[in-house]
Image 1 (cartoon, rainbow, N blue to C red):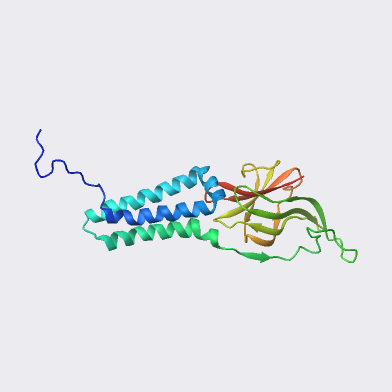
Image 2: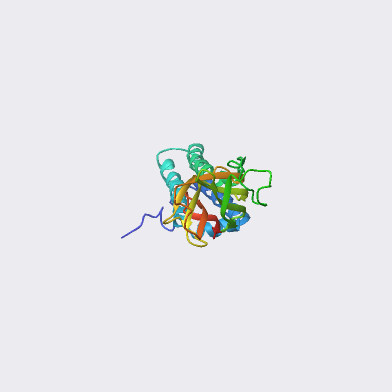
Length: 232
């Protein structure tokens, strides 16, 4: 079968070169971010959800770059549509990594602090059931986790001196066992309200009765562990 002479030997990209600018810049920016935070990069590579999200964003960008020029849209419209996708992905995943939030909630009643027991002048309003130090899991983390029993019988989890590398959609779980890195079979206590400071979470009846138990900070957005502390 003959090939028209005007097309013989010619090959064209399936996508216009100008439509590759935004995807390439986004890929370079993402690579620079992961190089700056190698722990996050390791965590991302171990997360099918994170890899799937990145792949989906890439497919959408290339799809827009292929479709819009074929609909008669020029470089400004194509780049604008791609930038909307990039900014949405950036807001959801990267921006939280730059946002530190500090909260210093008061101790429940007159509970002891992480640095020592109550002084003799303070009423014994709470009992330390157990304590452990937070360690990061591919993320920077420090602080103390205390399981306290209040005078009225209620139990609370106290995070003191918390300093966790920020990120999206962090949640706090109590998981039976030592050094657990997944929330399966545990209790969800709520979202992490701040990545720095002192926080208190009510524990449902029986939630901290059996030890050892792991306090797990979990990134729900990408299904990866962030930090944990074993209370034994």
